[in-house]
Image 1 (cartoon, helix red, strand yellow):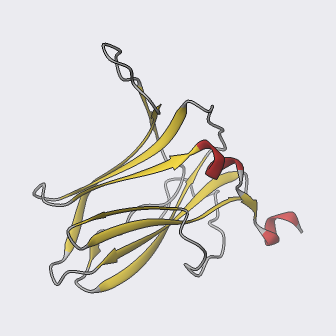
Image 2 (cartoon, one colour; image 1 turned 60 degrees about the horizontal axis):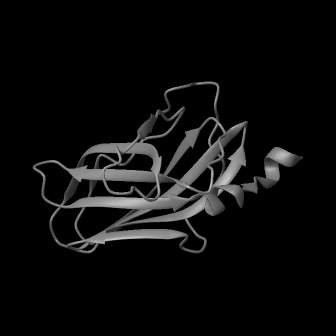
Length: 147
């Protein structure tokens, strides 16, 4: 269920190389795809729960921030609001799920990074996935979008 009914997600089976990964206590989130489809920039995430305890995400924050923060410098974060897509509500024990999140297309400068922060309900296992400007610039055009 997307936030914008005019945007259609690309077809994706959840395969592809791991472009970025974050792990914490049996829970793992991996970036598997970055593509442009239907005038949106799409990020395909794989959620793997390798523990027997269900993982319930309380929040998923997408922010653009400085890669390096020097001493006595304020950290500047710019929140990003997805156009479409959501994280899975619950990831069962010993299971894998996939999700797509779409944004209006953007590019990052060399000194910025896209950070995805995921927090578990109750504050247990937190994940932080960092996506670099190079990974975004290598976004593939969806085959069906170019036809």
